[in-house]
Length: 270
Ligand SMILES: Cc1cc2nc3c(=O)[nH]c(=O)nc-3n(C[C@H](O)[C@H](O)[C@H](O)COP(=O)(O)OP(=O)(O)OC[C@H]3O[C@@H](n4cnc5c(N)ncnc54)[C@H](O)[C@@H]3O)c2cc1C
Image (tube, rainbow, N blue to C red; front, side):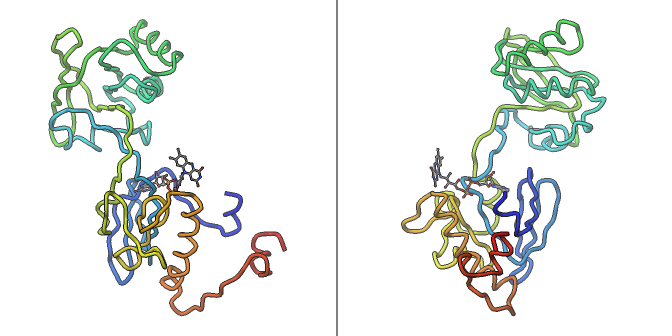
């Protein structure tokens, strides 16, 4: 971060690029999972092995509820104020969100398949104290079906660990079943893929789509090594071609930090 500071880049952290559409020659529209939209002359994909995606619970018909009343992450706690929440899981995420959302939700039910938790003992103790005082519910079992309409939940059918069947009235379901590394949305951006990697040519690390580059662990070419050093090398070569997309009228001047006073001033070492 210190090295990059003199160049004044803008960061957008904690969000995922969902779509990349070609809208010109070359011009792209890029959207994030939080609804930000960018129009850019080029795209550099440095997505490594992909992104961590939440593991879906095995509940038939869950898809229409996702993003409306089934959430795999909490973006804004306020969205859950006054609601009946069913939180599912036994790890730190499930326990942390149970404790954090409990004060503002109407009622929280934590559902886990057994009476043992993989979360921090302190969180488990706090949760058990809330259950003992009647401030929230703990159920042992699994969700078998969802009830509701238009993406909005009204209840979840639960099969208890003891074989019993019951229903939990809820406005939102928050399953925390862990994360898995997946290529994710990159697969839908129109670039060629080979075994979940993006083939590039090694003069500029451009993909089959002019204006879309791929550097670092996500790309593949003969002799590829997944090393930080290689990612930096690929970034340097990519920038040579990318410059011409951004500034078609400008001449690219190649400079060394050892001899360029311009660069030394920028880096604060002149
Ligand atoms: C155990 C281990 C040890 C290693 N040790 C070394 C070492 O000693 N020396 C060395 O040189 N290399 C080492 N490596 C390799 C090195 O870690 C990788 O080569 C390097 O991290 C690759 O960098 P990257 O930026 O391409 O990908 P990553 O570091 O994987 O970063 C990719 C980022 O993109 C994000 N992303 C993915 N999809 C999206 C999306 N759709 N929208 C937004 N963001 C997205 C991911 O969340 C991630 O943060 C090691 C690797 C491993 C696994």
